[in-house]
Image (cartoon, rainbow, N blue to C red; front, side, top):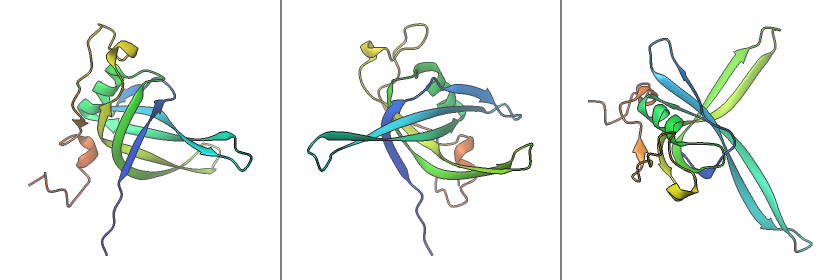
Length: 145
């Protein structure tokens, strides 16, 4: 049976990206996105329903996101859902659903603060993680021949 696991989100960063490195030396960045759903309530007033999503990216994509993104910046991401579960020190089980970022694109204009610490402007083209850590576990990926 065929399955699809594809996510596309456009939202604002809820916090500055947090960069770390795996024991292998691969960069990994974690950040949160807020996506607002606006609708008209029964009383006619405009209401908002925010959705907060945790995201992760690997390799050069992680380093690029860490370099250019800050809390409040608008970002478009494409990726797949990943379910993580672990046991805490007190023995309780915890789980989390997050987006494993495969492609992203900076949105907005650089004069709205989307530059790195040196004042460099981010790339305008979509950035993909092709060949990065994130795609190594996809056995049917046609880019790996």
